[in-house]
Length: 127
Image 1 (tube, one colour):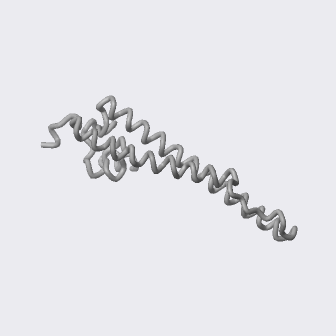
Image 2: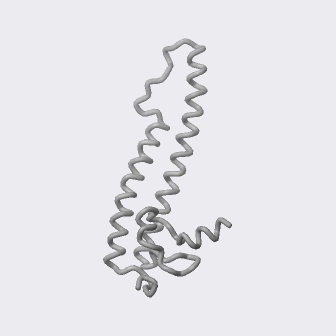
Image 3: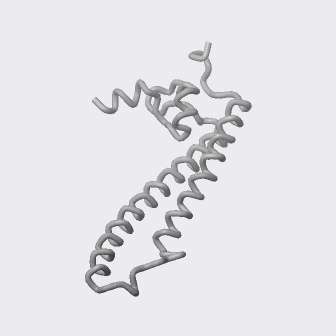
């Protein structure tokens, strides 16, 4: 019966919207935490330590900042994907595979709410 549907009902879309809104709140909080880390708020640096130790710490700090920057970029990308999913909900195209045109199973959308491909299409894409 689910195969006959061409889109999810308004009630189902509202359920997915609530899920995405919840994920967005968490994603924005995580991004804020990463930004705080990158901007050295609450910094307890090595300004008062010996020069040799400070040099080692500075190297580790640069590496850590690069990793944090990568995490922040990934988080921003995740947020933009979630926001795009909200737009698809508004347009009532959410949950429709962009390759096959079939509905993406609810289980997949609950696990990956910003998914635009069914498992079938995703597997074909990886070949």
